Image (cartoon, rainbow, N blue to C red):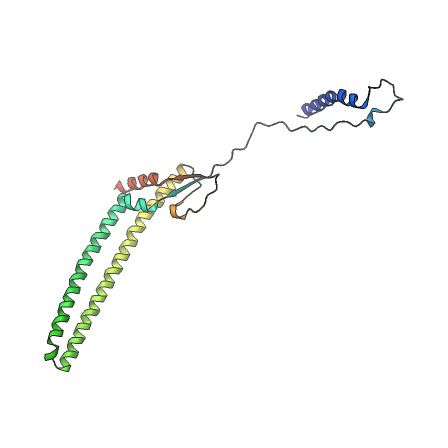
Amino acid sequence: MLTICRSAAVMLILFALPYLSHAEGPVSTAGPADKPAAQTAAPTVIVEPAPTGETKAERVIKFGYVDMVKIGNDSSQGKAAKAKFEAKADKYKGQIAAKQKQLEKQKNAIQAKLATMSSEQRAAKAKEFDKKVNDFQKYVQKAEKEMQDLQEEVSRKLFLDIEQAVDAYGKTNGFTAICVKKDVLYLASGVDVQDVTDSILKLVNEKGSKP
């Protein structure tokens, strides 16, 4: 490399001499008594390093996002969870409506007999009815708690399947990150952005079909 650079510098200097001589007058052929050649300003030569031919490959940033709502609605696990949740919810709705109707009937019966009751009887009926109302409220709270626990359970199982599918897909396809769609607010133009929802949905369904 050093030999190549020196040869290039010599050739550039030789090429530039006629132009320098023309600009400063005729070239003198005098001997050593003439002006020393060392005082003549030599042209500045900048030699660029030769390319090595080895360029470092830039890392491609692949960013994926997933529509969780679509997977929840379209996946086999999501559909099964939704059906289970709705069946239990409909059961509780029917039972709560029946109990509420019974309470309303008992209240009307008590009100119809208030005129014929003594104060002691009224107090006893009021206490009895209040207990039934409290029992009804406890039942409603119990139903709400069970529905909330069921929703958390099926959501946790579905999310675990999605998480495993995303992890496997991301590693196999060289993704830098895969996030939930709603969390993506801005990405630079140099990022390879892909919607991987359909691919993840396919993997989730395959996992759900296994025994």
